[in-house]
Length: 276
Ligand code: SF4
Image (cartoon, rainbow, N blue to C red):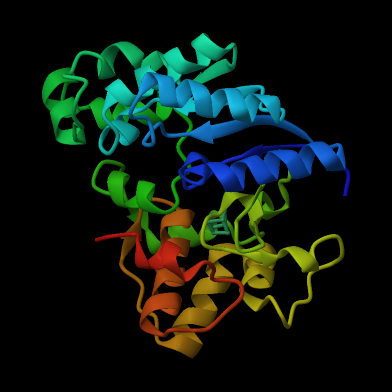
């Protein structure tokens, strides 16, 4: 389908070094480039071990590591590990691609041996810290980001939110940067929790097999709401921060409360792990 290079993300690819090595070898053998491997650095414990691991992967064609750097990651990963991975890249001649370096100094303002939650960032850098983040860092308001930002961004009335997308979600067509998950699902439009089976790619989508995606593409979240309210008993709230917020609430309801077994609402664990 014209894709000659990939990046490998997660989860965390380096939790399974043998699996990652097998993927790198397979890409090399197939003549597919690997632009970078993403890591959150959670695996780092020891400089020598890290250098040995990265040296082995470099021999298989690994050229660069995209290293996550953000307050969201620092909630879970001590910054000391991130620094350790950057140093290990330098030691073995691997390109380190910090995503994003702009946060380095503010994360480094905290003790680096432990994690720090967003409340600590707000206390140190101001009450509007979270609100300013999406201007500095690409945040897709889907998944847990909706949960993080729904108290911060102004909510809009249901009608206005639906009106935004009545002509359909064209984001679903965007293939400039796309993901396939480890279960063989293509994630259309970077809309996490929506899925197309890899074997169904490359031809028009069957509307009967993919009714939710067809509805979202043809009539946006308003179409999904019509279906969920009239056929599945979904009761919308009065307001949402965006169409994607409403879309996520409907899909979570269908997947978790109605327990619809749909190839479009995958992986189920995405919905199960959204949290409050
Ligand atoms: S409303 Fe749903 S399908 Fe449309 S862009 Fe947002 S998450 Fe994707």
